Every structure is written in C-alpha cells, then in structure tokens.
Length: 468
Image (tube, rainbow, N blue to C red):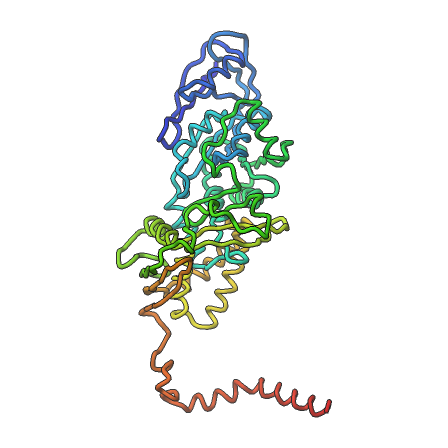
C-alpha cells in the first residue's frame, strides 16, 4: 500500500510544507480534482503511470514509479500553463521552483499560485545575496556587456536559477527540468546550455516549443477552458524580466521603431527631464575590485546595490533603448533599466583607468566583449568563462580607491577619483614641466618608435613623385 503525500505552502512561508496521510481506500479522479482545489491549497500528489483502483473512499494508488519534473516558475502566463500542460497532458508530477533575485513584490504568493495551478510542491527561495556575490560581481569586474551596452541582468539571473534548479531537482528526485520560455526566447537556449553543462543526465522539457498555441489569445482560451488562475501581477503578462541588476522589457509595442517607449514602460527610473534639477554627488569606494562603501559608510553588496538603484532611479540614470541581435539571429528592440549597474560600471572603470596600464586595459576590453557574448548565449558554466575569470581576478588586485560620481538628469559622470595604486604621476603629466626629469631616454626612444611611421611617409612621398 502506498502512502500519498499532500503538499501545502502557507502564505508568507518560503519552502515546502509536506503533510503526510495514510491512504486506506481508493478514490476516482473527480474527487481527486476536488481535493486539489480545496481552499487550504492542499494538492493531491499524483504519480506518473499510477492507476486509481476502485471508486469512493480515500486514495490508494498502485506501485507505479513516480516521474517528477521540476519547473522554473515565475507566475507568468507561459509558466502557469506549463504546470497544467506537464501534469495533465504529459502525466508528470510537477514541482515548481521560484527564485527571488530582488524585484517583484509578488514572490511571497508564487508558491500558493503554483499549487492552485496544479503543482504538487512549490519552492520559493531568496537568492539575492548569492546572485550578487557569485554572479553579478564577476560580471562587474569583467565589465561584461552585450552589443550596445546591455549589462546582462536576465542572462545572469538565468545562470544562478539554473544552478539552483539542478540542485533542487536532485534533492527532490526529479529526472526532468522544465521552463516556460518560448521557442524564440533567448532563455530557451540559456536553460538548455546551463542545465546540460551542470547535469547532462537531466532531461530538459520545453512545453512552449511543442504546444499548439500561437498567440496570447490562444493561451487565454486554454486558461479559461481549464479554469486556471490568471497571472496576478501586471508585469507577469508582458515580456518582462527584473532583478537587482536590472529590468528588461520586450513587447510588441516596442517593435514599432519610430515610436518612443511609453513612459509607463519604465518601472524604476524617473523620466530624466522630470528628474531633480539639482545634481547629486556620491562617493563609492572599492577594495580589490569590490564596491565596499557608499559616501563613507561600509555596506554589503545587497544594501549597496539596493540603495544605488533608488538613487540612480531618482535621477533617471540607467535607461537604455537598443536594437539587439537575439541568439537565434533576428533583431529586436529592447528597453532596459539598470541604475545601480550603470553607476557601478562607470565607477569601477573610473578606478581601473588610473591603476591599470595601457596594454592591460586593451586586453581587458577584449575580454569584456567576449565575456558579454558568453553570458548572453548562456555559456556561464563554460571552461572559457572560468578561464576569463582567472584573468580578471588578477587585474582586480590593484583596483583600490574611491570614485566621486555626479548623478543628474539621466547622466552618471565621474568627477573625481583617488587610489593608493594609481599609476598617474602629477609631475609627469604637468604642463609646468616641459620635459622629463631625465630627458635623455626620450631623445633616444622617440625617433626609434617613429621609425615605422617615417618609412611610410617616405614611401608616400616617392609615390607622389612618381605619379606626378
């Protein structure tokens, strides 16, 4: 005789509360469905391949082996449908996982929402500190960007999410992992790349690639037909992704390239024209490449980034409206907001300008470009990214100092910087000193360095003479 497991996630409780009950006699599917819709949110654990024996009474299943799938759940329309599709159409037992990466007031209710949709268990976890320390900080120190300046908030978020999905799948005996990303979404590739790298034995299911819905109207019709709850937050309806490092939006309105984004599309930044008229100057200190204080007050990463998002957002800093080349080859217009990321990238680069030499800065710029492409294409868990991290880590040994930043009407400007590791020599750079303290090396070096350019000049003169 099998013991079934009933699962409930109370409001404002992170994790999963398991209620166990011994089942003595069978029940039909209709009663199971009524149990699943109980107000307390209790969900009947359904085993893949198991048959209900008899009718009436409590639940008694045969000993068929359970097949579990762990679904990355955000409360969006796609992920809501995915729960029902995986459980009812594919006969799988759905466990959901949601991560709080620092944006959205609806995280506390995501577990309850997942259970209402048909999940048998729901996990909600706060990953904000891990996200900043193990992922965002590395991207910041590398100055990783994609194309026109996107600071990869969504790509970084998927990396930490996939690592946790693999862990939770193993702990819960799930042999499959799933997501609600559509076939044209970058996330489709990112989930596949990351999970395949972390655990090749896990099977990845992408129901949005296989289901017949082609429009939002098709999806809404399915939701109404099966009595599924609709997403509860307005942003869960749009092509929206948000975390501490930034917010990205992609929707049909933005694809009209001649139209300016609507003011209502921006969530955390003020319109620069309506931002305060008075500029604000802040001081950010770094220690070995890590931001450690704001205006002289020591802060861990989480409160520091949270504060900078508020300060930058107030002054309209961090807006980006770009045309972007998606992973699968088409161009798309994207709108980003990243106040804290913009401030910290600018400040970090301000310190590196005075502590790193020319050749090292040139090489680091090449690394930044490659690092950004790797992240965008979902290759966070690649050997190449780890190797690039090794290079970046060495460069950060001298990134110490303080940067003065001015925030004003959408701009973020370095207005001062100091570092005990600075390579800048005021005497050498001064216009008051006409020559080097010892001019002999300059007299020998400059003609030698210019020899190649002199040869080109002589050749150019010969050609002019011959053509003349």
